[in-house]
Length: 414
Image (tube, rainbow, N blue to C red; front, side, top):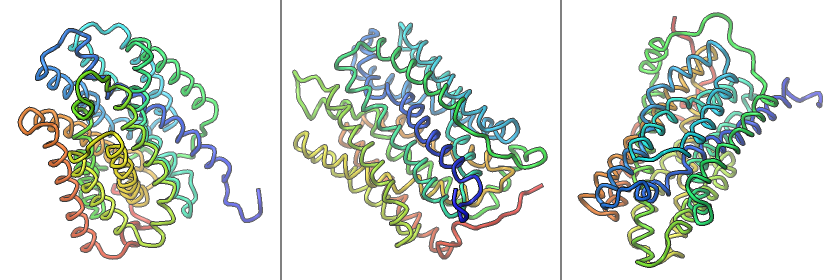
């Protein structure tokens, strides 16, 4: 370590590497079923197209509902008992759930286990809290960008892996392999992740955390922004396998192409996140946020016009780059604004907003598919993203300069 290195430099870098990798695996595990849900529901005995669409929306959304309800609780528990314990608990819980999926026999059982999957999560707020507590301020935007991007990429990489492996493995074999991989990730976390020092005293209650959020103007931009933007993106996720099926036509297995469609978004998201720090430093948080939302709207709106797999893949790449600039910017704002003693609780609410978006979006998407068709869902999702971009531009202008969006110090309400 050099003389000018900040204290704990190696620790925060190690923590970031472990959390990025473990979060990528954990979030991917939650999403590995996404491209398979309609097909697995059919295998479980439901053959009517409308019924498959309804069950797909419920099963996709189920874990996000439970996670949205419990994330503030797990965030507070991390402030109280240690965030590393919350990370370990979440990863082990996800491994157990994947083993249980091997024994599913009905769509109802599938839905119930997915609810349990959502209930045992809480990885993201703990990971955000550890990163923001142990990372030197100068490196925080880049670290938060990498961590947020790993979550976004995981939500897309999981479906990619699931769709591709489903062409070679049976569904239950895939669940078993996933459980084993997550178990290995749990061991890595237990061995290498270091808990940063906690703020002295008892953390504020969940109610005090909420009062601080409601009184903080930046939170009134960030939390609704996370909810609505994630709802717009996730609205198309449960019907994307059906979109690919329609694009390919009858007689062609859509599983591999569905997985490929998710994979290229994940790859583009990771590449975009690696460029985010430099781009944000040049043009500012506000421009990156608004531009990313508008670009997301354009990519979604063009999906119904795709004439084949190559044009669809090009649009998926564009979507991945666009998505990379939304959640990282908002999470950076939240983490820089939150006080040390309540960072876990505040990031828990931020995680709830994100997850709630992933709960509402698929439900709306499944409902819309029955009324306006699969292509219509993409158009509505594009409208939601465009509205978020316009709203972010108006609110950010009222808040003022970029440096006003990420204050260096705040007070904890008592």
